Amino acid sequence: MRSRNQPNLALSALAAVLGLACVFPFFWMLRSSFMGNIEIYQYPPRLLPKLWRFSNYPAALSIFPFGRYLINTLTITLPSVLGIMLTSTMAAYALARVAFPLKKLWFVLIIASMLMPTTVTIIPIFKGWVALGAPSGYAPLIVPAFLGGGAFNIFLVRQFLMGIPRDLDEAARIDGAGHPRILVQVLLPLIKPALISVGLFAFILYWNDVLGPLIYIVRNEQNTISQGLANFRGGYGTDYKAIMAASCMSVAPAVGLYLAGQKYFIEGIVLSGLKS
Amino acid sequence: MREKDAVAAYVFLAPAIIGLVAYTFLPIAGVVGMSLTEWNGLSEARFVGLENFKAIFTEDIFFPSSVKATLYFAAFTVVAGMAYAFLVALLLNQRVIGRGFFRSVFFLPYVVPSIGSAIVWAWMFESNFGVINYALNCVGLDKVKWLGEELTATPALGVMSVWGFGNFIVIFLAGLQGIPRAYLEAVEIDGGGAWHKFRHVTLPLLSPVILFNVLTSAVANLQAFVPAYSITQGGPNGSTLYMVYYIFRTGFKTNRFGYAAAVSLIFFVFIAAVAAIIYSTSRKWTYYEGE
Image (cartoon, rainbow over all chains, first blue to last red):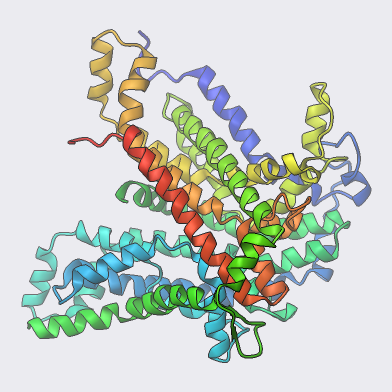
């Protein structure tokens, strides 16, 4: 029998091949974004551009207002992420730490609401916003984030809170701290990893959302990056170099965020899969 | 103190309760109520009884193709995606060099904006110039009109979705790493080989994780929207008219919101039924320790 710590070279090579296949679409997008349109349509395809056309990016920017879309997307995403982190933590604290009437019922209802596929209710929710007089704009996209932040996030933070010894809050309580102070000063520092995971996933969710902006944003200058990109592809169907450059710009922030916060992404996923 | 606790708890819980009412309970009631009406988004809604449902089941030529397309997409992505995610996880659970690095690589597509992913995959699947057909040519196979044929459009769109299954790889991997070494060693001591370890330790201990992943991926992929919206617009010939896209189109493109609500309600029952079927068969193949 071989040593347990000896790496398996054949399997490592297999992982490398599969890993390359997995990053291939990124490479293909990037390589196409530096080509001319004739070169993109060349068959058989070239692996790399003959000449790297960096000018494709400024050219794409002149017809694809990335900066505008970026600001719009952040205008929706940042408050939403804040709302999700804030209100899911509040709810999770009540459910994990405080005794109150009907607690069990609310917990069960919140968990059960996770079973509701969100796409089923887009029509009545739209009607609700029409009734409130705000069928378009950012409010319908941001407001829901401040309403509990999603059952799943409440559950995740609650599970994390359950793992923290109660002695800590009891001690603070004896010192005269109320619930807000216990949550903010004692518990928040301890659940920081879970909160970062929740925040990062919320960011990706809002950043990548297509259906929400499609329903509620009417004017192109208010569009998000994803929506702008979808329209851009529709409008400039054959100018593939510009489309690929725009795609690269749109994908880069999400990829960058992931590379910076990898650890929290992976932990968040592990937590979600194994605690459920 | 008790009462003060209760007040504080309800203050903390208030946003979540409002969200539960406004974004789950009322919309469920709303989708049922609206399904019985005709509403164009502007004027007053008109009560039409069960007319919408009657039309959906008797006259609507899109509805049957929509159900078929949705099932085909979900079946393809769940089967292919689970196989992909499970095999990659098994591989990364071996003594592979740079395991953490590869885990990050396979997870990466999960965070990519779906429109961006759709654009590059559609280009790779393009029938005349696409790199996938080029690869087929290289091994002596004919070009396939991936997005242009009813049979192949859904698998092509499905591959994009499966590419983003990095989260399931991470969950499988965490499950595999949670299997106690002692169990595997016990099989070794009894003279069992790799297959025995896999079949009698790994698979049963991982079955709850498999169930979780199958259910989650099925519910998510029954709700496919972006590929149909951004690439095929439901075509060719309704073969990628996934139900969420059909609901969207019926409501927001043709302003038949009552009708779209009726389709939504049927869609809800449809998802619940699929989930219930998966769950009920799982009793036969999942194993929970301590039972």
